[in-house]
Each structure stands twice: as structure tokens, then as C-alpha cells.
Length: 400
Image 1 (spheres, one colour):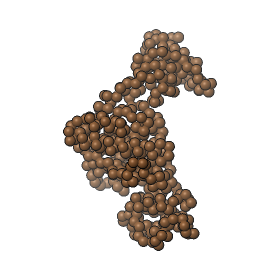
Image 2 (cartoon, one colour; image 1 turned 120 degrees about the horizontal axis):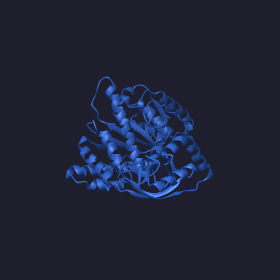
Image 3 (tube, helix red, strand yellow; image 1 turned 135 degrees about the vertical axis):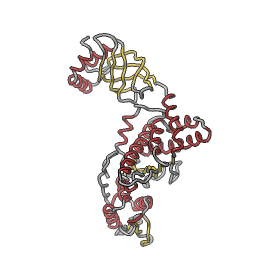
Image 4 (cartoon, one colour; image 1 turned 60 degrees about the vertical axis):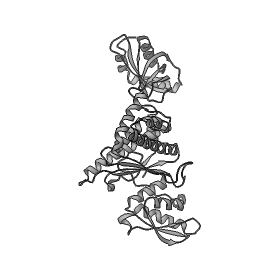
């Protein structure tokens, strides 16, 4: 499997070269995914059979170490047999070997339904909820907030491209999904942050159900809980009898300091939904606006006539962790922004990034000033202007 999230029909996972596979890691992964050890030569190799109804089919001979001359051959044969196995877990084992990472598994308890249509719908809902859960963890890795909106979203979504999905889960009726989070490039940090946040969210939900108080939800923000995570868990639980999230550390990397080798799964039920909804609304309401000094390139100008104030949209270059912001400027500042755009210069502006609307609007804008940039960036901005010159003249209303 080599396609990034969220492809619907992932490609077959690559078969690793035997020289790159640690026999102990392969054995640990087989045990994790339900394969059973059934004898073998002690100290030399072990025989593994797949779980469930396929147990009488494929079997693997896996060496226990590389101390024997035939270890490489046995590993090669075992990996090839895995690639040909009909067991869904074989694909997951191969993926975990190809991209060493932490495994996160979601499960939704949804009713049985004949015909397959309900299972397909359930799988789509599961994939969306799982992606949003990971996105919330990636956001929290970049800083704590009760509500992120557009902040950090570009970086978090770019990171999601490195996450791989397991089999589609059709065999489970849309109930299960596994993803593999690479340990490198902030992957382990995201896994750790997400696990802490889910535990904190579970504790807060328990406190709310027992006392009706929201204090635990407020304190949970420090552990990574946010509106984005409550929304993801709500989507995961809605329409089910319950849902759970379980994490297994990458065998090659082992558990991070302070964590159990096998963390307890986190479970949520429909009874948690009222508190989660209330907490999510509270996070949005309480997240303050932020004073910022933004440098950005003008990508849109709009006003109703040839004079007066107008609205400017900036592509943010620095000063805020958002992709774009919208600003209402008085006539003089609007004219400065238009002239800067004409000559291919970004502008610098001070204001408050408003939480309402998802941190996409700057209020109280002052000090609009053109900013010098490197020649290559200026050429790119000028080219963008030339491609949209008609729109620019219309937006300026024929004014200066």
C-alpha cells in the first residue's frame, strides 16, 4: 500500500526486501494482527497461521533471528506468502513493515444490514471521522487551542498526506479502519498528542456525566482537546452503539517514555454526545481573537464603487498560521493595497485575527504598508496580476 490518505482503493502494499526486515518485528506484527504461532523449531523458526476462517490455509515460517544461514531465504518466502495471502491482516502487516509507524484503529459498533449499501455508508462515515480525529491531533501538535479554525490547517493537512490507510474494512461491515502513522517527521509526536487528548476527553466526558460540570473539558485543552476533536468524536459515535480508538506503537521504535507498551483503547458512547456538543460550542465561544502583524500578497480586491472602503483578501506569507485572511480597509489603505498589488509587492498590516468565522478575518486593520520582497517572489506576484488584470480593474471600480 503506497497511496496516501484518503484513497478509496489503496494499491497493494509493497513486499519489503528480506534484508530490511527484522524477524522480531515481523513476529511482533503477526501476533498483533491475530496470527497464531503453532510450533516450529525452537530457537530457529516459528510457524504462523492467519486468524479466523483462513487459519487452515497459508502458513509462514519466520526465523527468530538472522543467526542461521537460511534466515534470509525463510524471510523472503514468508514475505512472498504474506503478499499472496487472502487474509486482510496480511496487507496490514506488509504495510507496517514498509512504513514503520504507529497503528491507530477505529471501530464503530453499527447494526448489521443486508445488501452491503449500509456497510459502504458506514465505512465512508468512519473514514471521515478517523481523518478528522487525526487532523485534530496534528493541529494540537502544533500548539494548544480550544478552537483552531483555519490556523495550522495547511501544515496539518500536508502532514496527513504521509499517513497510510489499511484495508477498506468491507469485511467488517464498515466497522473498522486502521491507519499507519510514520514515526518520523512529527508522526510519533502526533500519535502521542492524540492519545493524550483522547484520554483527557474521556476523563472530561466522565466528569460531565457524573457532575454536569464543564471544568474538566476546560482543563482538557492543555492536553490537546479542541473543538475539532469533539466534532470528530461526535461524528465517530453518531448512529452507533459506541465507538473506540486503539493505538499500537511501532514495534521497531517501541513505546515512547512514560507510556504503556500496549495503551488501553479509548471508548465513547451515545451518552457522551450532549457533553461533547456543549464542550465544542464552549471552545469556539471562549477562544479569543489574536493580535497579529501579517505580511501577505493581495489576491482579491472588491468594493461597491469607485471610492470608499473595500475588502481585500491576502494570501498570508508570514505573521499568522492561516492560508488567507479577509480585511475591510478604508479608502486610503485600500488604494495602497491596490497599488502594491499592481507593482507586485505584498503588504504588511496590523490587526486582530478574529475567532468568529474560523480565524479567517482581520479586524481593526491599521498601518497598511508595501513590503519589499526577493525578485523571484515579486516576478511571481506580477505574473499573477497580469493573469487577473481585468478582475483587478473591475475591483478598483475604475478609481486610482
